[in-house]
Length: 335
Image (cartoon, rainbow, N blue to C red; front, side):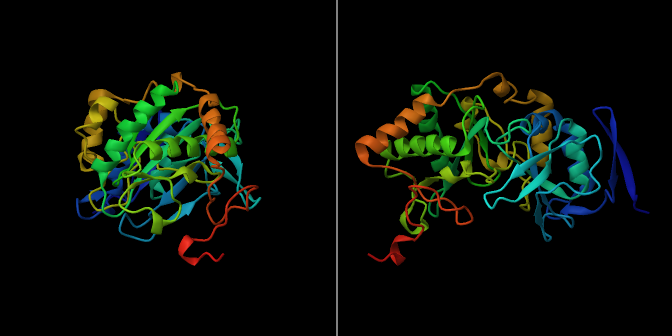
């Protein structure tokens, strides 16, 4: 007879996992209990990525093949030992989101069917000032991870020129993410502006492989640098997060020297547990760094002054920003 629940001890705290036998990844035979065990095993790693960050839960109560939803507001039954942080959306509305401070919080959320964790790039103490600049290298049709990898190395060299350092990870799909830790003194519009400047410089250096075009019809077979991931209320799957694909892939943090040989399918629920047991968190030193944005903001000013390059379109759910171009795709624009 299947067990109705079992208890995991995570970081000294007991967490109940209901219906651990429920299939969550049928193709691989992984259960809800396997998911909980995975998050317990990599707990210190994903906690480093989530600590004190307002976090949206991407929930799959019936497993990766079932219906899903994004839960921004913390559930009413959230334990008292899991703090929350209040964030505001572009609409002016707000939500109190969970802000994990211990690994048990991640396992608690996994028990609710949370497969992927989406943290804001802020801490609950300074919710209007990002402490991470996140670069999303998004392969477009006709490109793949190898193309994103190539642009990732170009980005690493560019960051070094500007006195910055990035930490790469797979998206869990075909893309690549690079995180730059920041001193939390700049606003979302300022960090987004710096991201646009960085993206434009990448595009200038390799226009055949890189694009900053918001409109899909203009991107071609290139890597899109999704600068709007730094707009308010845009989040990226956390390092170590499982993704809702049949083979149970993981968004895997990497060292730069590993990237040349890495493939997204190398990292899943099983292999990441083994890797973490061997190496621990390869991004553990990220929080020891906090960079400044002056060099990228100077680049943005130079783009505007010398090339007439100002803002780029925001996502459609954002209020119109001063100086923002029209949000009309070129093929539909009228003179």
